[in-house]
Amino acid sequence: DAGVIQSPRHEVTEMGQEVTLRCKPISGHDYLFWYRQTMMRGLELLIYFNNNVPIDDSGMPEDRFSAKMPNASFSTLKIQPSEPRDSAVYFCASSRTSGGTYNEQFFGPGTRLTVL
Amino acid sequence: QQQVKQSPQSLIVQKGGISIINCAYENTAFDYFPWYQQFPGKGPALLIAIRPDVSEKKEGRFTISFNKSAKQFSLHIMDSQPGDSATYFCAARGYSGGYQKVTFGIGTKLQVIP
Image (cartoon, rainbow over all chains, first blue to last red; front, side):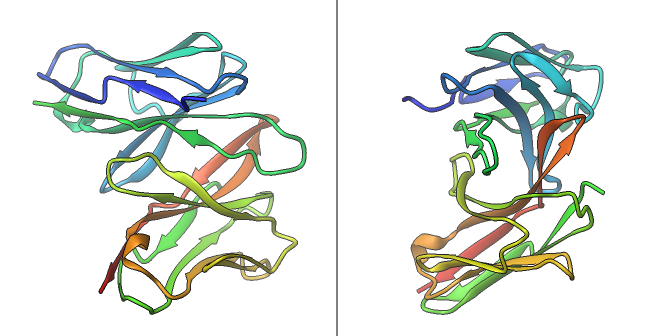
């Protein structure tokens, strides 16, 4: 399996522009997570889905952030309009429910976003 | 309730020494405590995980010690090597509305110097 795939790997944009980050989870995984990583705040959970349905978006910082999962193999995280403080590394992760044991989250390589 | 506190945020250890990272939690409903390792430019990857009914789990040079009464757990890296230099996250799994949710600590950047 190719693992979790994210694109683009790097994104540089100007303040006010729309940014779309993409994620392809591992086939067969029913959970998908979006995280943001910064030096100051560490790894923050933004939103997660189960079977394509958003379960908890309480970590989404503002209405400028939105996420969708139209099918089991694709998810997007959109920032509109982007601001310099959104600069961070954004990770997508997926996992599979397994009864009784810890179901490992597999992380993608991340998208490094820089908003100028 | 969902917070996991991790310390220190950075750690420098000599090669061959023991690296120790500590975490604490409040929510007694957490049922798994994983540790993730992240190398520069990569996503975090699961290193080792423990259940709260186990006091210690060892995998190679990596050991988790768990103190349920104190609500604390720690990662010990024995015979630390330069290749262990990475950021380490402790985490805890809980449930929200019947769905699994993992809360991560802020991370510890470990540097092992030769």
